[in-house]
Image (tube, rainbow, N blue to C red; front, side, top):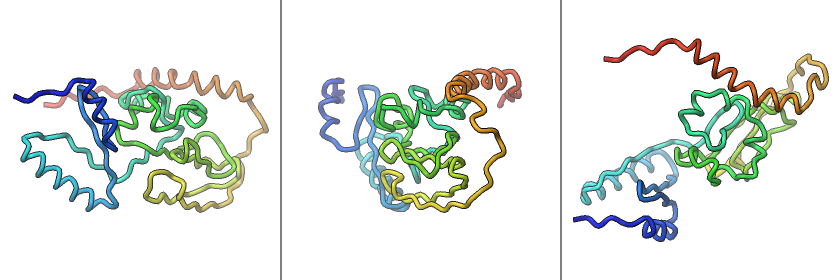
Length: 210
């Protein structure tokens, strides 16, 4: 009969195993391979060992770990809510200026568990491509600098090595400071709920699958 580890034994063990984490419900580990074929080869090795042990773990293979989103991930929000809600379209300093480091802080645990460790976003105008969260987040909304910017992301643990190409654009014809910063924050905070309510009413009915 298999002897299961207690929560305390698990906690004491995983701290000494780089890349491992989890609890009594599930153990998780994450490895980064130099390229996709190497990742598949690693999975093949794990499959052979798992079959021999009679243990068959869930395996998730990802080419990269970058989330592309209009405004940013939302702290303490599960992925189902994130995918359905307009919050991701309007968050500003709640993400990029958060003192909780992405993706390591508990507030971002949902994204970390999904294998997401880097974010490319916009929505908040900046003069030039701007990094935050110790290089794990990149703002490409360079409208304030009157340019449009493309980024080529290089493999690596963060986005510091991204290469950029920028082209000048005509600024949008809007009055200077049409609303205050506080009004913008209030608008961003109130709008997601209004959008979610509208979508709930106008979303097409689901089709029953047989």
